[in-house]
Length: 416
Image 1 (cartoon, rainbow, N blue to C red):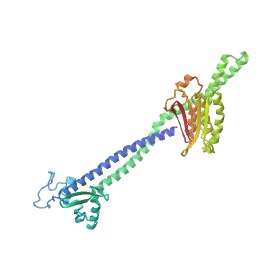
Image 2: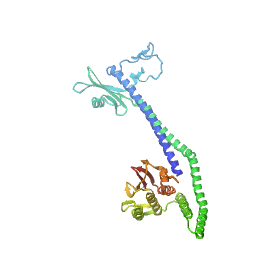
Image 3: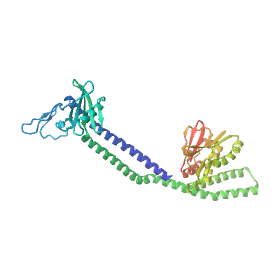
Image 4: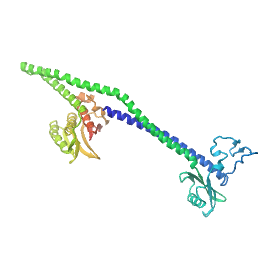
């Protein structure tokens, strides 16, 4: 149980960290690429405003060069090295692009080339494939826009591979950093999880030790009390008091047996082998038909044939008996057993009607010594250990067991 709890803690924490890192990396990289696209669109707009060219070229550096004033009112002095982005005075010299012009018939009438990666003919064919759109990314690294004026329809494509390179580097670095972060987190959780579950482990160990000690210490007094009862009955005859003592001794004996069974299931590993689960279930369920009838209750068994399972047949038999004993004791008028195959798993379902069963999960029934207030008030005898033992059996076989309330019925399912 402790190892499962530790694994669950690590998995939950890792999923939380993974979700957080994924969200952060998505936002960072989305914003990064969005900014590149925004800058590219600003450059395209400058070309469109210039009629297919950059409308204003910076003066040649040299004697008599004057400050360059951009259309947005910014003034760049000679030697100014600020990162201006798409508003840089050098943008016209550093942008690689071409603009293809089409007439009303859709024929290419000219291609203005400022790009060496493709030929003029390739640029014309490329632009022809884009003229039906409005703009966006093309061939991964290129940004384009389609615009019109009196001269016709124009397609302008700019090369953004250089501008995208830092973004891809950030993407790779962020993915690598995320992977390293997850690895470091996992290693840290391996150590932290020990400290987190240590109090639970200590509490569980103390509880098991208490159960073992209680079982051992109760056996001798129970034997003495029962022996004394028999002596009194032999000497003075049976009485109401001796019957009451015998009844309580019987309850204590069952409780000790339950404690021993629980400890045995927690400490022993199942002796697994393949067997016919359908035949075993039908064999165990058959006598219960008569037991339910004796109590004026109905019982139905629906067992799919030919289902084989690899496990400990003795322990699985105990599981079926526990489930049916529970249904026999707590049902009002009817109960049912069903064994079926669902996907790759075999599912044992035992249900019964019961008073005041709330709808929804009922995980508390698997706790040791748990008995609801309704059950206690009903006077039904029990020690609250049966389903705790059933849970240990299923866990030892790598399955899962759960209980729910469904429309006034208590439903116990074991998935093997």
